[in-house]
Amino acid sequence: MGSWRFEITVVSAESLPDIRRLGRMKVYAVVSLNRDYETMRETTVDKYGNTNPRWNFPFVYSINGSYLRQPGMDVVVELFCERTLGDKLVGQVIIPVKSLFDRGLRSQRSLSYPIAGTRHAKLNILYSFEETAKPPRRRSSSWEDGDGLDILVRGLSLMTGDFSSLIN
Image (cartoon, rainbow, N blue to C red):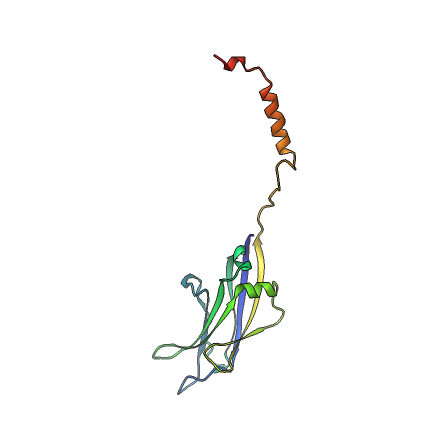
C-alpha cells in the first residue's frame, strides 16, 4: 500500500471551561500523531473566541498506507490556554486515524468529538485522505506474461548446443 496524504483541519472548539480568573481565554491547539514530537504542530492563538475558539487551521501529514488499516495511530489534539505564568492544558481529544479512514476518504461536514478533561466541550474537525503514491503494479507471475517461457526456451537452446569446447 502506498503513501497517503492525510489532512486534518482543526475547525473550532465549543463550550470550553473558563480557566482564567481575569481576562479572556486565548486558546490554541497542539496536534500530533501519537504525541510524536516530530509531528507536533500548533494552530494560531485565538484571542477573541474566549471559550468558543475558532481556527480553521489545516495540518497535513504523509502516512504509510499500512498504518491506515490497523489500530495504533492516533491524532492527539491538546487544547491550551495561553497565560503569562505558563500555558495551561484545557483538555484533549484522541482520534484513531483508522476510525477516520474507515468512515471514508473525506468528511462531508464537521465532526465533533468530546474534549476529555471538560464537562460538555467539543472539538470540531474536518479531514481528508488522498493516495499520493500508488505502488507499482505487481505481476502475479512472470510465467503468465510469457517472460518465463522465453527464459525456458532460451535455456533449452543453450543446453542443446555444442559444449565440447568447455570440456578439457
